[in-house]
Length: 582
Image (cartoon, rainbow, N blue to C red; front, side, top):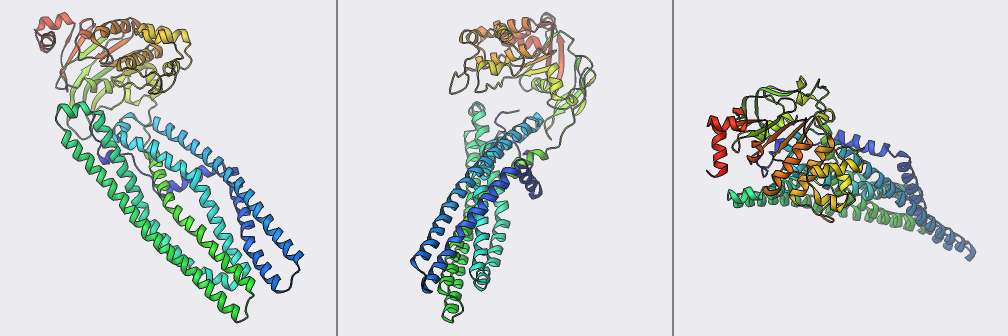
């Protein structure tokens, strides 16, 4: 399968619905409900002290008109100042608690996402594509983390403030409070209409971002294939098309937000005009005092800011909800019960037929039975199905027909942890974590000591690692490894893991030919007594094998030792003479 292939949309990971998203939010809140409750209480009291200021200010205005003394005015002003100070302290404490809650919730979310993704079947991960999985585990998680850390506490503050301000309007004047509520129904309807239209728009936007990221990632990973097949224009057109689709969806979101915020501004201004007119008319008719009118109008003016803040944050919440829906979608991938336990280490394929997705068969009734302790090398022309055999034996894919078994049970049905104790697959793609050399190696055996790690490095001829030491930091910002060095790390992990069966799919392809033979010889010595199945394009690995299986058009064309196959003059002999340049 080409490394630049872009996964079809139907192979993407699913997206959770509103009910699943609500349950996810509930879990995040319930996991730290004590701190969440403390945040809400702090903001509630802060809002209460805040809205007391305009009401007390109205009392001062009325008191001055009623002939209060300077001492009385000063006392109320002192209370106003105290309320401001208390409100400031409570707001600071609330924001601090909110950030702590958000950071803890974001950390739990990241941990759960990593756990879920690592539990996905590898075939599902491959079908989804790097872009889809990458945006869910990075961009989407960051959006939700921002919502929990910043937007969530902010909206909680604003909602509480809006509620308290409306209550304060009723305290100042019940009639003016009812007038202020006149604009609430149209505001609710506008917000509901916006949310109904924005929810799918944000999901489409994030999906488009995923598609664009997948296209760029696939084109980059398959750059050599693109160049060799002169596909530059095709990939460029696809990239531009995905980029334009992403831009179109972003513009749709901007248009929705612009129209909604314009309507919001009109509603807020209408509310202020209504309350001001009602207060003025009632004041001149002698129905309320000047202080009460000032207090009610001041509170109404203040309602606009938190209301606008809540509505503005709706967009961020929609982004967060869309991101959380994509994250929770990982949970919707059906679990595959893999609980079978093998009885022994007999690995075999019998009458296996297999194809990728809905495509044609790649293997046709293929049977292969490596003997225990045998070094079997599988060779054949490109596209013959060699790597597919490795995937089936490693339990990554399930045959369409026939069986691939280990110890008498289907390989695909064995639990991953149990399977990897028996079978380890090493491919050309190796990942080195940004961590110490020691940490990169003990992934294979967390309890391995330094002596065991150093012995494994010696066996794969990683002299550079022995010279630099196990504490050497690896990664782009530290010691950047060459392809050959990364492959040596992967091979050392195999030695440390000590499995019964090792499948090497071009595991030494990145090592220069002068060193490859030495590394393979060292690895063969390290794996002596174990079953080794090596997928090889470079035929020098086949010469020393116990047995060679030649694959052609998805079938075993012939099998035997190097000398037997050369003498037979068949497919292997032709490959060997072509490789030798005869």
